[in-house]
Image 1: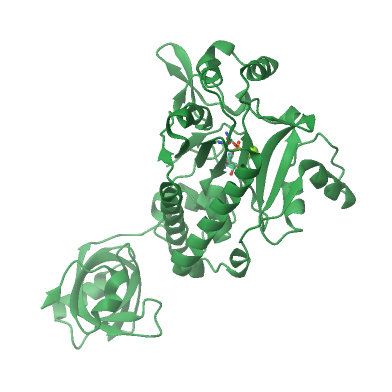
Image 2: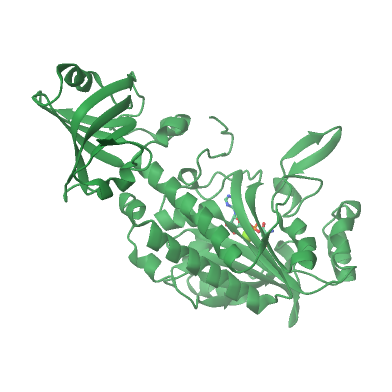
Length: 432
Ligand code: 4AD
Ligand code: MG
């Protein structure tokens, strides 16, 4: 009897059995008498061994005809093979090409990135790309599990919005029945009212920034997870960010070991990512940089080089706190000890991955927030509803945002964010 519906990932549980599989032929080697076929079904890859002597003639002809990325259907016996990554092999009893592929553009030879990006829809079949996207999927589920198990309510923030959250310079504008609308840069402003209904909330969805910066750390469309919590103050916010990031790293180590292997990711640096994370203030960070010869001045924002320099001194993520209000968002709560500073937090990942988390305590005083909106030249009418949060039962509160792609890039030690999202949106590039 032949078992159907078994995925390659689960073949280990079927050693000795006859199984039927459908999938894609990833690669083939043949000696004329024996063929070695690497078959992928989405869950994994297994080597199927074809013997000219044992296969019906028509099936052997199919083995010879099969090309890279043809769709194939086969039956065979599962045998244990400790040398293969899947632990098993299949001895073919039948083999058929269901759809013959001609000239698959991505061959085992090296291709340039521009070419691979044009063929992103096909590139995602490659083993490294599959590993990266599987890690992404695991992290997404880890995010939901973390917040769900901590009693947060998920609040879906809108994508079409009437005003800016993180500054007007990076807004994507669109027409909304004759008015202007903007693609959301962050769900934060919409989460804040929800804390008065649910206490602890989070959103997780795509966000958009027209960043004219062509770096390996910027996408125009990226996914951000954002918790927002009532009565949470700055210390609690730092603790939450630390607990969240450590939990996600542990989850990836626990559940993505095969993918990390495919990516040849050294896991020792990830295993060190346990709390407490080092914390330094912005002012301390400036002093450290200047002591290293960097010309930065107090009041300047950090660029990617500065972030990397700061993070190199630590073996786990570093939390930089208390930034100058001058270059941070309008809604941040001033530091009690110095009105030039705000209670902002940025978490910088090790190994050069830069800022993965940005957050703050929010202003909860109505008049102060109004003053800040005016000082930032923002349209007051568009923020009336946001000011209402401070009018009807205000409370101290805080939250942060973590960029999914930055986190996944760090986990996989990937060169560029474009490999962490199925269809990256980059400067001047929107195909496919
Ligand atoms: O620091 P940001 O701008 O913070 C906010 O948007 C806050 N409203 C979040 C909050 O407090 N609820 O962005 C948060 C994170 C960054 O730390 C980074 O990980 C990621 O979003 N990010 C990007 N990721 C990819 N491409 C870009 N262009 C990104 N811009 C920000
Ligand atoms: Mg930031």
